[in-house]
Amino acid sequence: MTSPITVQKFLKNADYPANRDDLLVVAESNDAPEDVIEALETLDESTFDGPDEVVEALDV
Image (cartoon, rainbow, N blue to C red; front, top):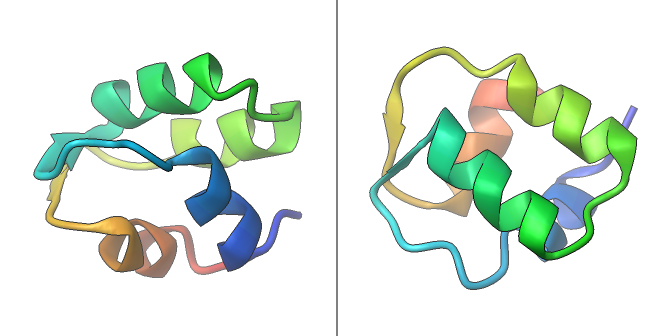
């Protein structure tokens, strides 16, 4: 499992509000490891207003 700090690190430069697909593109462009990508893939179709909301939704 990944940590909140790790998730936020790989979402650097994300433009919010953002949805799951937007966040996956940013994470992949930041060379996120597979555990971060897998965690983001579990997000629902919500729109997130910032990295704290993403981490809260991931429950990491």
